[in-house]
Image (cartoon, rainbow, N blue to C red; front, side, top):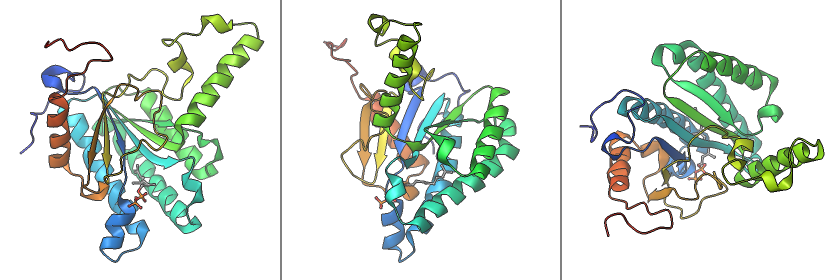
Length: 250
Ligand code: FPP
């Protein structure tokens, strides 16, 4: 039984539901190894979990889910594993092109996708085009993404505007800077979930998670279902978000 009743997209914040949840999809490899399966089987199961959780977030009335699918550091993995992850993304995008308008799920990609295969880039362009024409819940897939890389690129973009005479360094503010990030236009995630038990942020959404509540669970991502998300959301509702100030409750 779902902890939260189903709501229309855009109703987040009602009953303490976050608008934006971010997830580090960790533990796929361990999940597979514990079953004597190749690591790629864990990624396949992880992609299934992503489908389930994205649909559930939408049904609950959240506005955004952002997942870490492939980092700028993940290229160091064996070629077979990299290929398997890319092929799962390819398969997911193929399916999404058929179903996203029907299911009202928009997809956006954060990261440098210019280095991906021409085939994957074409699929991304196609999903971007479909996303432009639908409204509602949005899933953001971080692909060839690194938080530091994102900040450096944003700084470069701003510096370029200064060199071109469009901006002066003093004009840059904390409010404007996010507009130069891959995530421009997205609200910061209120909740960051890390399955797999590791206590680190792994270069994920470094700017955006400055004040996110962080929920870590030992459950491995392929085992993370609706009940686990309900638990994370219930925990989030107990948090007293102070943003460096004092509690309103005190
Ligand atoms: C981290 O687990 C997971 C990844 C590096 C890849 C995640 C990618 C997917 C789930 C497929 C993406 C597909 C879609 C549709 C979004 P790990 O391999 O580091 O796990 P471990 O810590 O147990 O080794």
